[in-house]
Length: 172
Image (cartoon, rainbow, N blue to C red; front, side, top):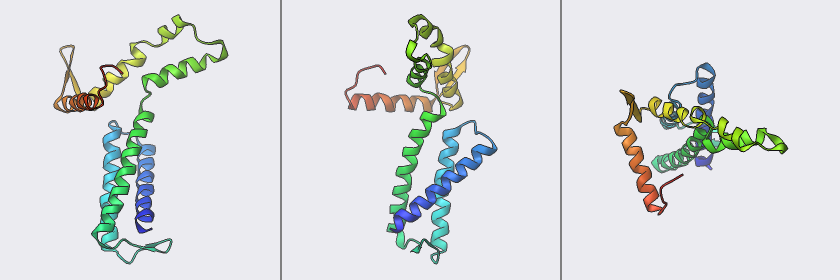
C-alpha cells in the first residue's frame, strides 16, 4: 500500500507542477520540460521522504528501505512514460487526427474529395512536423537543406531497428 499511495502522491504532485508551469508559460520544448518536472519530482519527493521518515499520508507511513523506494520509482516511471506518450498526442495533432477531424466537421453530407485534398496540404501535415524537428534539435536547416543531428540520427536508427524487429515494412 505504501508504494501505491506514495507513488500516486508523487505523480499527482508532478501533474500539479506541470499544470502550474503551463499556466504561467507554455515551454518551447514541452517534452523536455515535462521530463524534467516529472523526474525532478521523483528525485526531490524521494529525498524528502527519505529524510522525513515520520511522514504519513492517509494513515500510510513513509516508505521504509531502498526496495520500497525502488518500487515507487518503478511505478512512477511507468506512469510517467505512459503520460509522455499520451501527451505527445495532445501536444501536436497527428496527421490522422487532423484528417478525421476535417472529415467529421463536414457532417453527414461528407467532404468532397477535392476539398479534402485542398485542406490537407503541406502547411497542415508536413511543415508543423518539420518545425517540431527543428525545435527539438533533431534536425537543422542549413542552406535550404534539412540535416539530421546526432540526436535525430539516433531516433531514426531506433525506429529502423524497431520496425525491423517487428518485421514491418517501410511506411506509416
